[in-house]
Structure formats: C-alpha cells, structure tokens
Image (tube, rainbow, N blue to C red; front, side, top):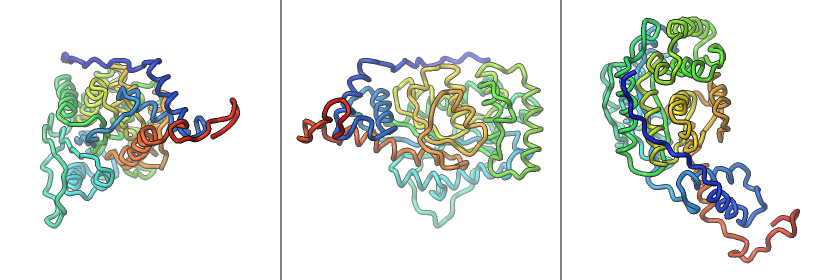
Length: 360
C-alpha cells in the first residue's frame, strides 16, 4: 500500500470534564435522567466539542459520490448512469438530501470523487440552490472488483486524501455525512464482512430494491469477489480491493473531522462501512461520532454491533444520500439546546428532589 500519513486522533475521554458536565445536566429542572438518551447525547456533544455550553457553528452536510465497476454486473436494481443523474438532482435541489439540508440549515457540499461520465445539467426550471459542488474525481469510477482490485493502492490513498481535503476546506464544527454510488451497498457489504468477521451473507441486502432473483445473483457474485480478494485483510487493503472512491473519501473525511474534534453524524450502511475503515486505522475516531439511524440494509446492524454503538433512529430507511443523518440532526441540535437553555433548579427557583427518591 502506498504510504499514507494518517492524522492523529486524540482520545477525547476526560473523566473530570464529563463528570462536571453530567452534574450540569443533572441539575436542570427535571428529574435526573428524565430526558433519556437526549441527556447522553448532550453529554457526548459537549465532550466532543470540549464545552459545557457547546454551540454548533455552520454545520455542514458532505455527500461523496462515486461509481463502481461492479455495478455493471447487475448488483443494483438501477443502472450505473443513475449516479451521475442523482448528483445533478442533488445540485438542482430535488433530491431528498437537498430538501432535508435546506430544511435544517445544513450547508450542502457534493463531492464527485469518481463519477463515471458527465453529470447532466439540472432542470431548466430548477430553483437556485446553495449547493457547493467539488469535482475532483480519482478516476472514472472504480474497476470491477470481480476481475481485480477496485482501486490501486495509489488511488486508495488519493481518495482518502480527497476526503481529508474536503473537511479542511469546510467551515464549522459539525459534519453530517452522506453518499451516492450505484453498487455501493455491495462494496459496503464486502467491507463490513471483512472488517467485522461477520458472515458475508449476513451483510448483503437488497440495496436499491432488488427482487429475490436479483438478491440471489448479488450474493453469488459477492461471494466470488470476496474469495478473489481473500488476502485483503487489513483496512486499506480491503478498501482498495472492494472500493469505492466515495467510501474512501468518507473514511478520509471521518479521520480529518475527528482530528479537528468536529462532531460527526454518521448516516447508514455505506457511511458506517467507511467508518469501519477509519476506526481500524484510528480507533479513537469513534469518539467523535453520533450514529443517526439503523438502516434497513442487512449488514448495517452487524456493523453497528461490531462498533458497540446504538443509533438514534430506526425508520426502515435504505435511501442513502445522508438522509437518515439529516433527519437525526434536529435531535442532536435539540439535545444541545436543552443543555444550554434549560434552567437549573437554583436559577429557576424550583425545588429540587426531596431526598434520594424524590422528583422535581
């Protein structure tokens, strides 16, 4: 593997700071723990940002897109050209993630990490959008992983560095991640199985909506791909073997964001597969992450269990794009608003709990 200079990711665990912040939460005008997981979420955000009164500055939505050579083998219900078409839809403002980013005030950047072909122009009557587009393709889509590695070692490093560069260029202290790439649930399944040790069949799902025959074809093909690259066991080797450019860019973005102590909201199966790579390289990257949702893809539950994390939502989503992460964002923002805006018992003149068993 070509040399890669990994950013340092410090362990954010500070027991004394966390204890002080927990005391602040416990002294709000509510019974202790009455806000459930929102309290743990507020604690996590405060620890990541290093503040007892954290403030989100210019939160950013970063969507990385790339094509997969394996898509030509029929692993998706949609043809490969949909990747470029959906990138155009993102920019025109008509995709789910475009709508959600606008709704929740997230700056949206779409990165062409390796989309095959030309991204078509958006509709002539499309409303103007504030979407930033960054075109820095590593190549015209990855190679067919059933015939050889999806990426060369040099391409793998280039894609990782692309993700890091994207984060360096973005303002703010919070990053919400998404992706687009026809065929990328296959790459995510292969990566998840290889990096978690889970059976490959348990990591393969219907992706964009394969029928039973399509799912059987996908299972058979991915078994062949896994066998062909049986020796690709390390995180970078597995990433290069299975692709794709957008997954590698997301792994780089995760590493850089954790290095900068930005909060990262992790979307579904594909973004979590990228996190598996980043986590294998720098385990402390996990400390910077909040997990948005459990997707309807079979392998996502396996990846989450391997990481030992519990997502905020379970809505049966399998769209991708970062849609689940964008839907979870207002929950994250609400947890911080409660931490900052709720009065203490003393400040509000409200009697606290009477003894150890009382309530507010």
